[in-house]
Amino acid sequence: MKNIHKSQIAFVIAGLLGLNAAVGIAAQKSDQAQPTRASANTSPMAAIAYFNLKNSDGVATKEAYFAKNPAARDTKLAGQAPYVAILSCADSRVPMEAVVESDSGSMASDIFSVRVAGNVVGDDAIASLEYAVKYLNTPLLLVLGHEQCGAVSATMGDYGVGGALPQLLGKIRPAVQMGTKNCAGCTQDQLLEKCIEENVRLGMNELMSRSEKIRTLVGEGKVAIGCGVINLANNKIKWVVAPAVK
Ligand SMILES: [Zn+2]
Image (cartoon, rainbow, N blue to C red; front, side):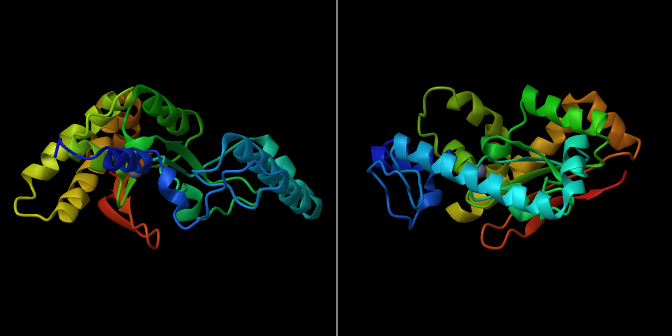
C-alpha cells in the first residue's frame, strides 16, 4: 500500500480536493476572453475569466428574478432563517443546494452550509454550527458524507500526504479504525462504504460531545440531529442515524 505510484497519489489528492469533477470536460489550457467552460485543468487566467463571466450570469439571473419579485430582494436583505444546518464534504459533486432544493422565496438557500473535506469536525465547524442553532434558531442539524469520499479513502490508504492534510486525515482515522474493525472480510469498496458511514457517525458524536450548546439544545428537543451518506448517482441520503427529536 505504501509503495503506491505517484500518479495514484495525485489522483487521490485531486479526489480529496474535489478536483476530479471535470471528468469528461475538455481541458482548456489556453487563455480565452470568453471561455466556454472551466475545469480543474483550466489555466488560472482562464479560470478567473470564466469565474467573472459566471458571476455576471448570476447577477443577471438574480436581477431578472428580483425585477419580477421585488419583495424577494427585501426578504433576502432582511436576514437569514435556514431551517437546516449541514456539515458536509467540500467535494464539488455534492453541493447541498442540489441535494436539498431550497424554497425560501428569495433566491437564497434554506441551508446553513458548513463544508470541509471529509466533513470533519474542527473548532471552526463547531462554532459555525453553534451560531446556526443558537443565534438563527435552526432546528435541524445534520452531518452528511458521500459515496467515494476522497478524504476517507486517502485516510484508508496512508499515502503520506504532506502540508496540512495529515491533521485533517487524523480526524477521520478513528472512523477508519472502527470501520475496519467492523468489516472483516469486506471488499475494498465495502470497507470504504463502511468507513464513510462511521465517519459521519463520528462527526455527529463529536458535535454532541464537544459542544455543550448543541448537546443541550438536542437534549431539550429544540434541535434534531442526524447523520447520513449521500448517494452520488441520485443525491438520495442513506441515514446512518436518522434525525429525530429526543
Ligand atoms: Zn468527500
